[in-house]
Amino acid sequence: EFMSVVLCTTKTPIATPLKTNSKSTKNESFRTILKRRTRSARISSSSAINKSVKVEMTTSGGGDAPSRATIFWDLDDCLYKNDWTVANLLTERIEEFTVGKLGLKPGYAYDLYKKYGTCLKGMMVEKILDEKSVDEYLLWAHDVPLEKHIGRDEKLRDVLLKVKAEGFPMYIFTASARHHAEKCLELLGISDMFIDIIDVRAVEWATKHDEEAYERAMAIAGVKERERCVFIDDSTSNIKIAKKMGWHTILCGTKGRDCGSVLVCAEANHIIETAHEFSAEKHVPPFALAAEQPSK
Image (cartoon, rainbow, N blue to C red; front, side, top):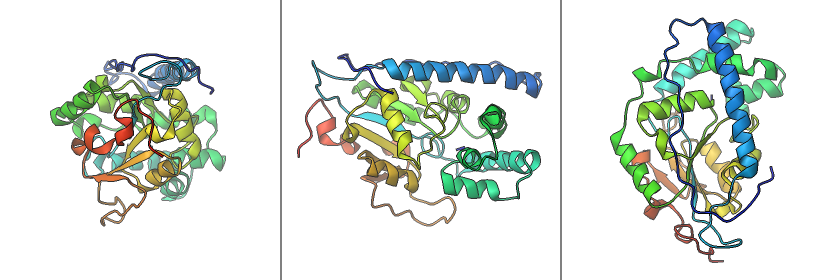
């Protein structure tokens, strides 16, 4: 499934390993898992929101000196690719929930996804699902065997290690839930590459089809200059909104999920086949490689 900020001078944030819970839940009932994860998700969300209010600006000097670029990575079908195998499993789970539990007609969940950016957002807008049921939905939708389809990626880790060593703050910016993102990053072996995960709850249910999601992501990351936001995503729809927001955009993937044809996106500053091709030198705007003012 798919704030005001207190600004102050500091050094570039250092990414620390994201905490994940790898404890087996095979013998737990769904109700027990739901209760435990719901509490965990709410605590994580609260911490993320509180942190976004107090987040410090990344600068290299005093006062309002501009920062180097902050990089926002999409997760599913971007940092990893497996011909949409996981995406299709998630779609099946969502279909099971919306048809089996909510009584919606088959296919309507995907219609909501295409219209609103996520099925969840569509159900909330159309008052099909209330906020009290969101946690149950997110747990159900993301309950797929990720370990069968995502494995450790040393090449990707090397790419991200280089970017991290060059001093660029990196965040996961995903329309999915935090616990799903944590599991994916753990399996890929790159949990320690990112400062934080900006998930659907952190942006207050806004989707990447909405400008509000990007504004909230900037607030959480403590970024005030839009042109210093580098956004990597596999969705042309998301790329178009990010570009409209003034972000530097990189389309990751050249083939459409639904049509299978070659993607064309004029709003993308760059197009790469996979995340392994990314490098700051090639894909970050020259003025954002260091703390310099962009040329007019």
